Image 1 (cartoon, rainbow, N blue to C red):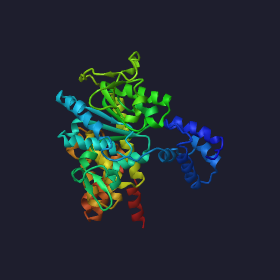
Image 2: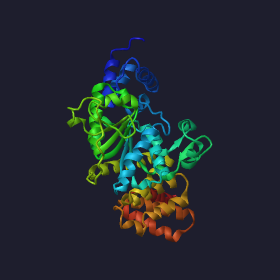
Image 3: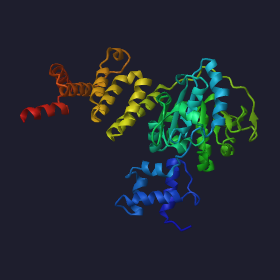
Image 4: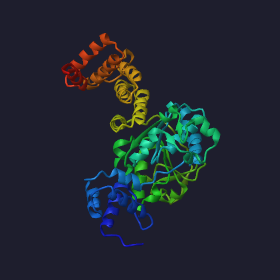
Length: 422
């Protein structure tokens, strides 16, 4: 293999700091190719681009997305999921406890969606289980939110499974809305953001095919993070080839799967390596919810909706707004206004009118947060615009007056003034 410039050594250390991925001669080729493509689309030479990338002068997300692995497929780890349902989910539900599940990393959503589908096939109401999925790649999270996949991602599932959980299009398959809305997706770096964005107390953590990309010190750091995130009797499932990287810190459990671990190693270091535990799992209601972290997750979802709208990814924006309406009633009014903006910009005027009117619905006011004046003005403006196009001048006037009071600089008022001057 050719000798790389010295700056690459610094870059590889930076990659490890940012992602945990240990770059060696075996996996350095994707990094080289990614840089080649990104540099070709810039006006910088290789050293300039790398230096600006590491300094933060260039958005690092496209680079990180390109060098991380996204490909997976549905029901890839079905054996582990079935064991989790039998030994964790069902016993918890019988005790009246709402199970908390984390998929980390989640790739493009194949794993958490697969688990939700299997729960549904076991007759479990998806609203009774909390499923959170995280990944470092923004592109993976956006793909997961869309819930659309090509047939290749379904290569290991039966036609009956596809018919039960997907809607087929000409070249893609979309997940049924109920399943899509059952998973909360968060873009994050587990090594640096887990403690600030995730609430400890997960009864299940699925982490397949991530630790294999880390060196031993990083594996230990990540395992300690998982150990902290788990409920006292929680279980961590990893890929079979990753068990040796976990069992120095956590205790191997026997529940019918050979790649599952219980919380413990940090204070059970006296146990011989690979020693299994047959201690029963006792579930209780002691798990507390950190409201600050919950609000952080919600804020990320809200920002994702706004970003999708601003980037004109209208379908994605509507899906996120619908998720907020369904799962976070406190933000329903705000989400209805956001959805109205998307619909009016995409030419769906009557639907936009309906969403704007829902923002003022009396049934929402009692359990929704205060709607900022800016958003109120937008809702009134959308209603006025649609009424104007339909020739309903009388009702239009009162909404324009509301816009004037709430936001005197609103673009709609400027358009009206320009129209009068002309």
